[in-house]
Length: 411
Image 1 (cartoon, rainbow, N blue to C red):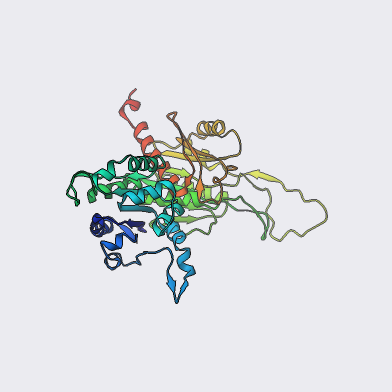
Image 2 (tube, rainbow, N blue to C red):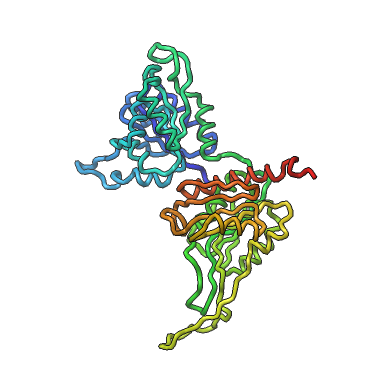
C-alpha cells in the first residue's frame, strides 16, 4: 500500500519544537512526511532536525539562489509539492499564518503552497491566549473553517508566556486524529470485497479503428485506491488506460464491453460491494473487419448494436450486495439519475453533468450528486477525484448501515 503524503508546515512559535515528535507520531501512523518551515520557525528549531527525522528535503524558502542566480526549479517547487501532497498540516500555526491563509497572502513557500494546493488542510494553532481570543484571529479562523479547513482548537493551560488560558498546541493525539479523520484514514471496509469497474471500452471496427469515449479511468481508479486504503479487498476491472494500478489492488485488464461483462459476471459473486464507474461504450459495430477499411469517396454507413448492460444484468440478482452505478449526463441530471437508480436496481447512482466546468472525463476534479436508494440526494461541490471517491465510500458505508438496520429488516 502506498503511503499517504503529508506536507507539515511548521511556523514560528515556541511550540515548533513539538513538531519533531509529531513527525514521529505521523510516521508511526503510516504517513510519509515532508516539512516546510517558515523563517520564524527556524528561530526555534533547525531544518536539520526534520531532515534527519523524515529523510526528506526540508523546504525553507520560496526561491533558492545558486551562484547568484535564482534557481528555476525552486521557483515552481511549490506547485510540485502541491500536486503530490495528500494533506497539508500546519502545526503549530501562528496568528500570522492564520491571517495570511484567510486573506490569501502568499509571501513565502508555505503560504504559496496553501494557495496552490487542492489537498485538504488541517491547522493546529498555538499562540498567546490574548492573540487567540482577539477578534481578528477568531474572524480568520471562522473564515478558514467556512472554506473547509479543519481547525484543531488549541488546549487550555499554562502558556510559555506565563499566562494561563487557550492557546497551547493541541495534543499529538488530537492532531493525528484530525489528520486521520480528514484523510478518511480508517479501516471501515475491512472484510469487504469491492468490485470496481473503470475506464473506457474499445469496440473494434477494423485493425486500425475503434469506437470509444473520453473516459480516462481516473474516477474509478480513485475509488479503487480509496477502498483499498480503507481495508477492502479490491478487484478492479479496467478498460484501456495509462493509469498505474493502485497498490494492493487486483487488476483485470479488458478491452471491450463484452470482455468487461464476462469479467464482472465472474467476479461479482466474490464481491460484497460493486461500484460501476467505467464508461462502457453503449454501442459496437455489428461487423468488425479483419482488414483495414480503405478510404473511399462514397459515404460509409456503420451498423451498430447495443453492448451488454453490465450494471443491469448483474444488479437484478444482487442479493445483499450493495451496487453503485454512475451516470454521465448532459441534461436533466437528477431526473435521469433517479430513473437509472430504479431501472438498474442499484442502491446508489453517482451522477454528474459532464458539460460542467471541472467535471466529467479526463479531469482531476469532479462535481457529482449521490442519489441513494433510501431517498437521500447528496450534492457535492467541485473537488478532486480522490476526495470524491472518499465521499462515495462514506455514503456506501452509511447506506449499508441503513439498509441492514434491524428496523428496515423487520417485517
